[in-house]
Image (cartoon, rainbow over all chains, first blue to last red):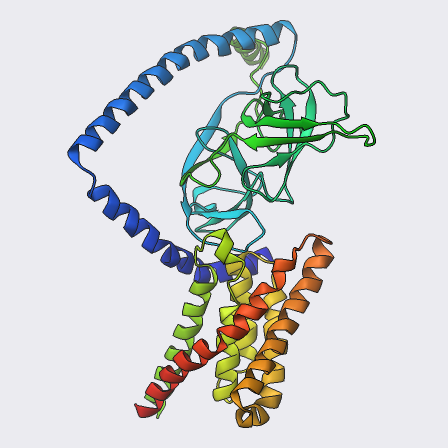
Length: 261
Length: 162
């Protein structure tokens, strides 16, 4: 069945690019019409931003090493290292009611289904179906989507379910006395295996508990700009954990083996 | 004659491709819920005007393509379109005699039947998730039938002159 879909997509996918063409052209026209001054100011602000990010990354490298060392002390393996591919959104409307978007990278770039998709601010969704030239991405706000999350403040685990509105997630499985309050950051918990651990998902904006109900009504706003971004990042997470035994030991074992041979 | 056949085939395919483009056009979400099933409207038109050319096979193929295009369960549009086009082929002689309003009423029931089929299939997958606005394309589709009829009438007239 998937083979048939892939074959048919060779005929159909050009249409998606065709429909997307006016948007691309409009974007290019508005790009070429910007003045020198706006470009210069944008360039300056971007350079500043990059400087800030790089300074943060300097610290991040040290923290990562420290984290690995601490994990090693706890005898716990640590997953790290993710590869990303930037994909651009095609402005195509697949079906109303469903938050499924189409991007211009497909299996030809090695995209496969159930890959996590991020943008600069947080988790966007996951690859729902990969075709040769395009792939369909289900946003976290789709009513059929659920993402395992964790409250960043205290590590409380729960599941965030899409609500069907672009700016809202629902947390339906928390009891009324759960330690969660408006303003809490929700990050991916890494459970379920689809999303890598530690990426921001949403910020809790409302917590109401009714005495006659077992579960509280909690809503959250996604961090990612789901309706504004045209560039998304498709992530490959390396599933090989960093070895706890440091490298020299491994080499020694190898040389011992050679000697035995 | 043979060339004319090819030209006709090209025109029919082109109109269907345009309908498919309209199907996935990036309307804002408030308007997208009104977006009618253009592919079905065009298929109905051709099956009424040239039933010897456009039949169930066309409906099935373009149904499958629409399934892939909109990322649905493979075969749901193929099923709905083939069924509707079968009914149209059975009734095309009578429908040509009908006054315009009566024709529009027939189109309304065709679109309703197709949407009903899609509704059943959708409900089998994820029960009770569809809103009432799911049925809006049936009404807008009926309202845009005169438009399709007029535009494609122009296209087919053009073909006959050539």
